[in-house]
Image (cartoon, rainbow, N blue to C red):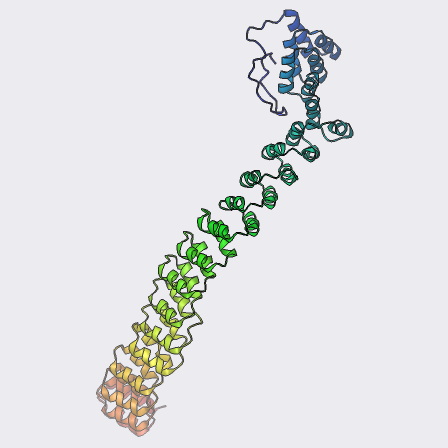
Length: 506
């Protein structure tokens, strides 16, 4: 290691302020005998020879180099003892890799507090160190120990001995140990609201922030913190401490953080403020929480009419109690989920309202939901006649037994499949025979005949129907052997005759 390696620091070396003054001159010349002694002090295998060589070194710069860099503790302490120049001693105190050298150098300079601090900072707690620690009264030195001591117990003990507020204000921002920062804040002399606010804003540890918030009394300080605070626990503590409703209002409206505004919405009950937030906040979650607490249905309707987020509108719909408004929303909102929330709102109880929705909705899922709340046949019939959606009109059939209505469906035959379903529900045989006679379509006639049991009617159909499929269906239901024999001999269609013969043999 060279004489000019003085700026190199090992990992365990404590960082010291950099000296602007150049301690070692560029044109320094060292006597040969001093360099020889240095070599012996460093490299001799005989420890006594190394110690003797170190003790004989008189060149201050060589002694300083050994003191700062040699790993052999005895050699570096002998070397530092040979340094007389105050500037060089200070350089050793501030820049040596080894705390024992630094401590000895500080002692030589008459700065006993710093000398003791080096020992306390770099030594584990023990009776001998406790004894010298108790002698430290300088609070700047105690601050140093509180920041750098390897043993946490000395860091804590140092903070306990500090009362000067300015020292505490400096220490709270320099200490890496969160327990030390918290201890600073909790000291009785740590009273500056400005400093407490700074701690809450800048510190990254929750326990330190909470300790600081608990000591702040000024609502404006608390507001400044809350506006941008990320920690929900801290925000809750702050909001619980603020008594001025205007400050809470200001935070709720002006904080740039949605989480802050959200927390306040959950806490506040001011209807006017909630209205402003519900209608104007940029965050949908904040708006939705405000909507949950609003009871004024006019405001809720404004939200439903203006908010572009379906989730917010859904929440608003849940709080609407006027059936007319809900019917309007169910019919007109452009979002399926909002419409469904409206039609399923328990405030709609009138079957007339559900009928109106089923008839007028152009959205099948809403109309079907409305249909599920209808029980009266007359309403199903009205929907059948007037529904805008064909699928809804047809969905009513299972709930309609009115004969006239069923016959009208069959006779109209706008959709043969639907007509056949209606026909299946008709049980009056005279009506079935009349439908057959109408000749609406072959399929309808076949189905009508298939539902007739009256043998006289069936015989008439079997003998007179023009279409062989219709006669076949009638023959299949005739039980009279005489009639069957007549048909088996005289029907113009071979297939019908065969069916009649088979029926005779049953």
